Image (cartoon, rainbow, N blue to C red; front, side, top):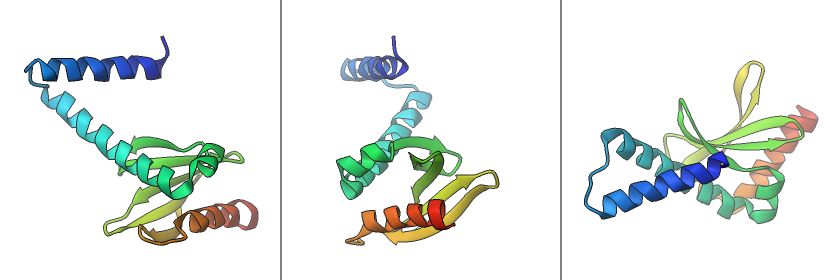
Length: 127
């Protein structure tokens, strides 16, 4: 069975147990909070980028040591987007030296997706 399907089944089992009145463990509750944060960030990025760009960039939400992060993978380069301490997002490139900030973008920026795409282009082809 594929890992993603196994994870869906585990999540379904937790929902069935919870609906039956069986409380989740603290670990399961923490995992539920992490998943909710990942889904929220991934949903935001999908809405901002649109389905075509999201597919081309292989958008995937992951949990890192700094919290929920979206990985964007293109042209052999990995980029990350995560929320900053305010109401904005940080676009980073992941390279041999770790993460390097490319841009900061406000969540309400009407050209959020364009700023992400231009930042990626500048880092890959002009950087």
